Image (tube, rainbow, N blue to C red):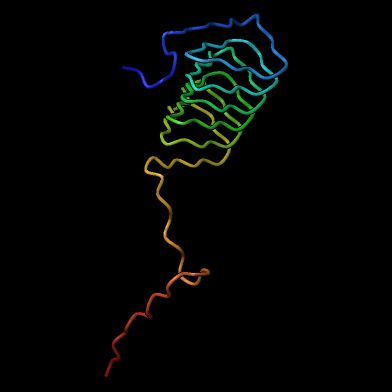
Length: 137
């Protein structure tokens, strides 16, 4: 059983579609057109090779081909396929980047929602003891 709400709803916007504004959908969307704006969904987005997106994406799942200039956030996973180009930051529990993909940005992949240990000397951090070095005689 799929964890994507309305997963049975499949939509396609072909390469002749140009949108200026924000896009919202549920279920799955295959997008091959051009978008200047944001995409928000609790569903899955499949960007085709021809797709060009300028704006942020906030999704459940993102499978990216084409060109994206913007930040991408997903509740489940982000896949950047071999022909995909992403210029922006990523945040998701799971990340897959295929060989040949272009990714320029920062990423935060945190499947267990864990937090890093504080660095020694940082505010509130416990100082580690100095190492004991034996003296030579």
